Image (cartoon, rainbow, N blue to C red; front, side):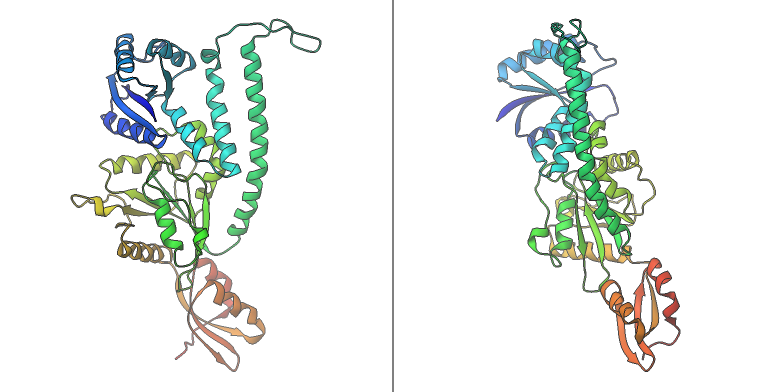
Amino acid sequence: MQKAILVGPDIRQDGLIDYYMEELANLAHARNLEVVYTFTQTLKSINPATYIGSGKAQEIATFVSNLDADICVFNDELSGSQIRNLEEILNCRVIDRTLLILDIFATRAKTKEAMLQVEIAQLEYMLPRLQGLRPSLERQQGGIGSRGPGEKKLETDRRKIEKERTKLKEELKSVVQSRQIQRRKRQQSPIIKAAIVGYTNAGKSTLMNALVKYHSPSDKHVTEKDMLFATLETATRKIAPESNKNYIITDTVGFVSHLPHGLVEAFKSTLEEITEADYLIHVVDASNPHHDQQIETTQQTLKDIGVTDIPTLYIYNKADLLETSISPHFFPNIVISLTDPEGIEKAKTFIEDQLFKDYRAVSLLIPFKDGDIVSKLNEEAHIIHQSYEDTGTYLDVELSQNQYSTYEPYITKKRIK
């Protein structure tokens, strides 16, 4: 395991530096780094050459030597030249928060889509840093049809990266098209669609697995681990409770403060699942003292991808780890523990009550010639009572607003006894 020193320049001075550094330590742990020391420094301005002050850089260099550290991780994003200069002073590898997150995503990506998204984000990160990381001004020998002997190696590298980025984006586009076909099929369905969102490691995948446990085989479960960014792949499942009030639920990648913009852009095709949901289920780690800050970060990230007006349910998870009770600021909400069977039952009831609160109970008379309508209702609606009369099939049923419009011609005032 590599030894890491964390460096937190406090340029924002928003009183949250300890929170940011705790999160950076968790990110380092997720990448299997051993944190041996943490530095913070209040900065009024950024040093163009080394980001932090030269004196602090020399102090860190001493600790790197004494603690035999392999790597220094900066909480803020660095330029290519700053990384190069710091590596010369500190005599160890230097990375920033963005590169650490990209590296975590690269190790977690399993599907072709996620791998392409991460690789594109890595190339986006590398492009503006080439000059600092590749200062060589060696000139190439040009030939017929080339740009000539004046071309720098730096420009060749940039062209190669841009070419590779274009190629990967085209490949991702074809992968995304198949996902969009599946998404369009779901859009045509009247079934309610919900997306689970929230901070990474808040319990989103735990909730997803709890909801599918009684309705799907184990191979429908998603990865569930106590670590940051355990799940990168978007998973969609159909939930079919005994009430027959079916709904579709999607588990999405978790968020984190200062999530790299390039990563958000690369994962937009995945995050589009959120924009098309009827409801959001926002899972919050209630035991984290900064959970309000994490909610704000999640809300801002959702806003960045165009999600602003989707009804949201708040599930405050990990109540078993609370030392004192909390007073949630967002509604509707429920405070539970998803490791407790009783908490899972409460969460399921809460979600179903909220998703279907606008359903209307009506009586329908379906002529026998429209028997296919009865079959369809039995598949997608909550049938309270069903019986047969001389003129057709009577049903007492609960319908969504969309379903009500579809089956309105069959509504009757007469109810079944």
